[in-house]
Image: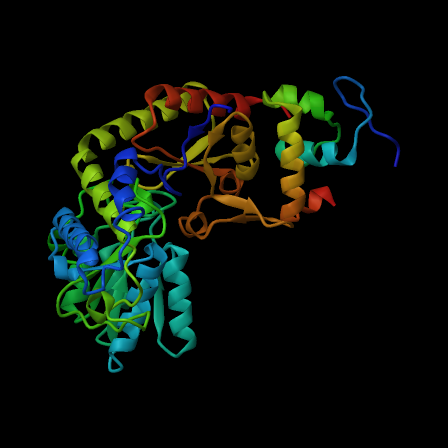
Length: 377
Length: 65
């Protein structure tokens, strides 16, 4: 098999072998339905309890505030719809124009039902400022939802300050922390958020599992109705193996966080230094103090999709911030929102480095990029 | 349309190769490379490019119609 360099860790991550090992017994011998009252379910029940405690510890929450979901998209949908429908007296939601589509599409859904939504624009670094939120928030605002870190450009938002503005105005605050959890320290009490979304496959856990943190006392209706699982807040038979895998992965990533951040930072700097040495004309999108592993780069006069495929042919896997939709090149809503000039925007790629990447791989990525960009057509 | 030839080796070009050249190298190109010369340029196998062509067609890319 051809060697690959996987540099799309913001899309998904490789499941850690230790995570798989922790999950295995619950896919084989201990496969019981955790909600059943018989003795065979005890191990599954205990595993879920332990996982909930472990995850709560990682984000400084109470175990009773962690609700398991099928992933980030469900958590985001639940936060937006569940909060909107829970309080008919305050119907407004505020979010930003650079949120993940799980938030934006959920907001568009409640808008169609008559719930007002305001969309804040970021500044040119992709930051949602306190001043911007202050201008639109009102006494009718029920929920403010801003991602902890942007999935395309890696900008880390001033969540603590934004949550403070929300609370002063009597609103609740949700943060989509899917891209941040397991990569930067996240403490729900320090940030003072009321709800927080997470997804395991972004931090070397399994796909199809995530959680929503809901602070005690936050009014929210269930998104999924059915059985009494998750304290009657989220129906559906518990995905025991994946819940265990998620807890193991989060715990591991949190303990390795400092080293991973340092390594990601060095790799990103190396790629940029190779581009700079070759005098490549590009913009590094996003705030310089964003997520260390995300490098969102726009190359002047280039085509991001062509760069993606050219790198793919050399075994290097990245994302693009612009894609051909069969008739024209569509620039992502995030790149548009931060006003990247047209001459650069279409040439946008996202390199996202993870704990499995090496300095040598970063060097190969940088050098390969230069050779592709400098090639005469 | 007059048959076009690879600007590097002179091989007669197929329309998928022209589309691939435009897709991955230069959308505004007037002269093109054959699939073998494209593979040399990209540092990959011809087979990799044949797979890409099929994928672009499945995605509905208008260049390959």
